[in-house]
Amino acid sequence: MEESNVLELSVELGHPTLVPPAKETKRGLYFLSNLDQNIAVIVRTVYCFTAADDRNSNNKNACKTIKESLQHILVHYYPLAGRLKLSSDRKLIVDCTGEGAVFVEAEANCAIRQLGDTLKLDHSTLCKLVYDIPGVDNILQIPPLVAQVTKFKCGGFVLGVCVNHCMFDGVSAMEFVNAWGATARGLPLTEPPFLDRTILNARCPPKIEYDHREFFDIQDLLSLDKDELVYGSFVFDQEKIEKLKKIGMNDDGNNGVVLKKCTSFEVLSAFVWRARTKALNFPHDQETKLLFAVDGRKKFDPPLPKGYFGNAIVLTNCICKAGELLEKPLSHGVRLVQESIKTVNDGYMRSAIDYFEATRARPSLNSTLLITTWCQLSFNTTDFGWGEPFLSGPVGLPEKEVILFLSNGKDRKGVTVLVGLPVSAMNKFQELLQEV
Image 1: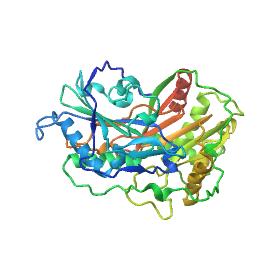
Image 2: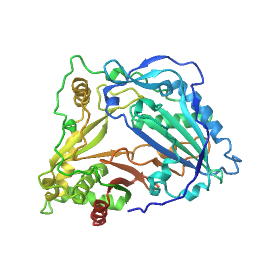
Image 3: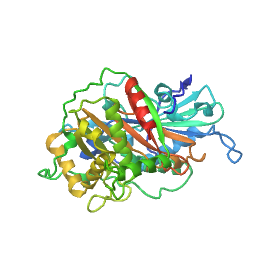
Image 4: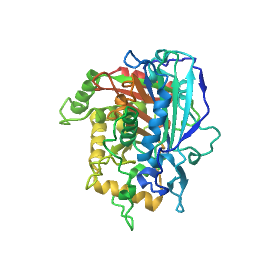
């Protein structure tokens, strides 16, 4: 496990200001689809940039550049300048008021390289780099987009971004941030966002064609609510992943070939699901559920328009008894993951949209592991004029049931796994990962 880096970081915050779009934008209510409703959680990310080189004398204009470019990009992404509210049928909707995103300038007491690897920083340190709206009681009181630029004594800076997941998934979030960066560099917007989310409206009447066990509420025989969590990051390099694939494809208990192929995501998901289940000492007859997101952009028929702005992911699932998961070989878990992925097509996506319309249910996380992968997201290419970030990534995990996959290494073929567990379970989890 990568050890946490505890840094006494002091950050002095300036006064928050509102950054409205540079031009008048459309007013009124902006529809959010049922795929947006299910994941209205706050997501925080940081992008770390070094001090300027000789070609760009200093970074003192970073705040000005990022703030002004935000005004211009919000013209195209104007719902981010609005405010969340509840519609008459109790769904989230955006009131496009044009108020603007919240922007904060801040100064840190050290050089940026003293941060080290952001994945090794403790949560409280990272949180100082992303502004939190004080005194809020619910997500409706948090603007859809909040940005903080923290300047360091060396001239480097960190952009901390806080967004509500209901506004976009990882793919469209990175399209927005990269478009923001391109605007800061004076480049035109090459791919305008497709803003009309009504193309994912529920059918009338709703047509539920699948069981959608992701919403099932499993009886949890093991409560973690009272246990204090610790967070760790674990690196799987390409060699270790290939070793797991070999085990996952050939491990039928008799060294026979059982799977012709498997992806890094499939084998890592199965392996981590088994390791977490064992580390938490699940009872033999406890049902356990694995949830993970599948990007539906190309699975819809027809595929979603390029630049779709919003959530286009659906959760799919595997459910089995803890005893079955642990006693059967790794290939069993891999096969469960593969079968779940195969079920996701246009019909499944539309059925999930209709399921929420009919039930207003949200996925249950009892006895559940939710894996989300950011491995395909281009965090490392964001450029506001000071080159690509030398470090970027999330600030913590949104829920205790969530594990996050991030790309690792210069070739991005390795994977870093971020996980939160009680101390005793974390020690066991680490031991199981070291056995590979």
